[in-house]
Length: 110
Image (cartoon, rainbow, N blue to C red; front, side, top):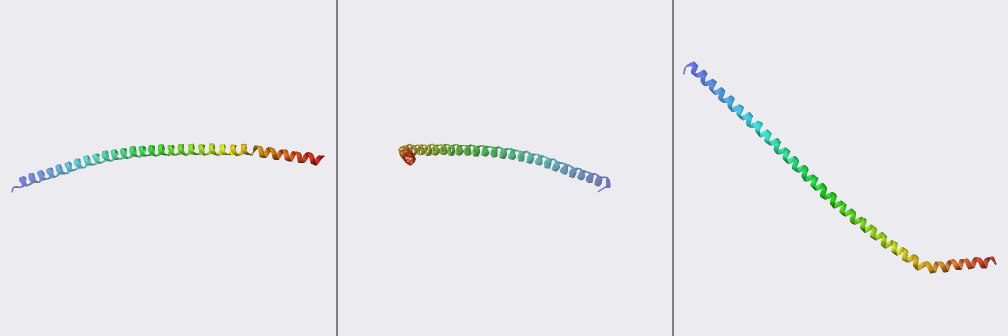
């Protein structure tokens, strides 16, 4: 094979190799861009899911706190009523005891 033909074939092969490398680099860059885009979508979805989960948990915690608060208020009201009832039941006994002490003081002074 004559030397110019060999040189031409080598140049053609080099050009073909350069084209293949350039195409591979373009393909690589495209895949990297797609991977970054997909990673961003995944990150965005994960953040949204995390926000929604946080909101659900906060709402659940608020409901539990409201229920506990209501229960504590009801228990306090019941205890207050019981204390008031016991106090009303003891009014006569306390009054009698105070009158008795008063009478003892009066008799002790006379």
